[in-house]
Image (tube, rainbow, N blue to C red):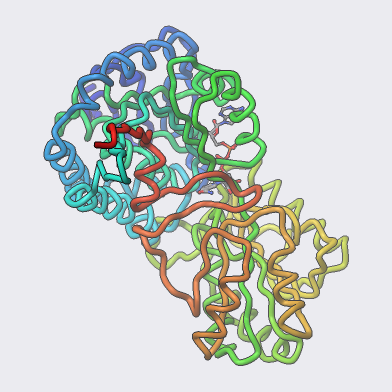
Amino acid sequence: MNSMNVIRGCHLRKVMMTRDMLYINGSWTASTGESALLVENPTSEEIICSVPDGTIQDTDLAVEAAKNAFDSWSKSPIQERIRILHELSESFKKRSEELAEIITSEVGTPIEYSRIAMVGTPRVVSKSYAKLLDSYKWEEEVRNSIIVKEPIGVCAFITPWNFPLHQIIGKVAPAIAAGCTMILKPSREAPINAFILADILHEIGLPDGVFNLVSGRGSTVGSRLSSHPDVDMISFTGSTSAGIAVTEDAAKTVKRVTLELGGKSANVVLEDADVIRAAKSSISACFANSGQTCSALTRLIVPESKISEMIPVIVERVSKYKLGNPMDPSTRCGPMVSASQKESVLEYIRSGITEGATLVAGGPEDVEGIEKGHFVRPTVFTDVKPSMRIWKEEIFGPVLCIASYKDEDEALDLANDSEYGLSGGVWSSDPDRALQFARKMRTGQVSINGGPFNVSAPFGGYKKSGNGRELGVYGLEEFLEIKSIQKPIQ
Ligand code: NAD
């Protein structure tokens, strides 16, 4: 090892590290298989890590460990769960820079955004569950019944790469709080942060078997977890197509399935809005994390009368939206996570041009001066029509689609014209008018005049954006069963 820097089985050479063990029943354990999955840095296109390509046997061992640990952990004192969640939050704080750099290496997220959203949010979410447990009511009385809330059991988590640690913690923290045990299968694109999480949970003394980590493919580990008879709940975040496959695999065991899926969210500017502010804000609302955000506001819906005022502001802002090395703190847009993701986004941009939308910024050409990395130019289309693919389908890259409307009814129809319903935005100088409009949007979240993300508010989708909610008390209750005990009436 000599020249290597070793962090609990993680060998950091200049760029390459190996995490060759799975975390099962409180120990780093060799996989029963021999293959590995390689992790690429999407900026340098170098392989930076390899992790076990977990097998069905590995998955079964992890489920068995979680099952055995459940009885004791489900009865653990609430104060102990609060301690673990506080220490988890503190560990994220201490290891913030390391984790932010790792996620930037795996995903290509600009480093400033990694610090805030990729690590800062999991830190706050863990703490929010510690606080929530302080006052959570596990029992209540309804006439002659005692209503008791109990942990659902063994939970399996299948997560994507785009906000990897945030999506993991949105499941792990409430599951710990609820008294559930768990198996995590992270994405193959960005699994390293999950290995660091296992290190942290081990260090802070989470009992053996409560948290288990099996890296691997969706088609093996993911599918086995979904269909496993000893898994009581599956919490999935990812694409709608994989969510459907998970649901089908889970159906025969009648386990609880929660799904956080794709989105194609609308950002509606009403006539009386501060249109310059709305125009400026619409860029980061769509392009944050290089457009690879499920809740990105990718469809900007503006009054016909304001379009000529807004477009130049947007085009000017996008021309200054700095694309490049995500480790440079001034970079706003990094690469796409992979070559295939880049190709998929470029294909959408080409389809927008072919279908007749007007390209006002960006486009499918290579980025000048960048030799390596899966970069796509931040792109804006106007004159986008509801029949176009770029209007209907989730692109998952830095592509903003702008449509115009004549009256507010048409604006609402356009906003709700999607098979998804994850997020949304509305802009108006009249708070009541904005609120009335927000109430009519068929979507799980709406931000008024750029209102910020709230880690204690439920997050989740209508329609094909999913089932169930994460974060806050609603996120906790997804992990609970509810029992009614009837007392005789005296
Ligand atoms: P993906 O669906 O390809 O993969 C997500 C996870 O599912 C991965 O761990 C993958 O290995 C696993 N998987 C794939 N097929 C599976 C199968 N048949 N059975 C079991 N597991 C399977 O998604 P992705 O490309 O990693 O992430 C991008 C997608 O995730 C986008 O559609 C995005 O909108 C969505 N997303 C949704 C939310 C949300 O909260 N609603 C958050 C982030 C991302």
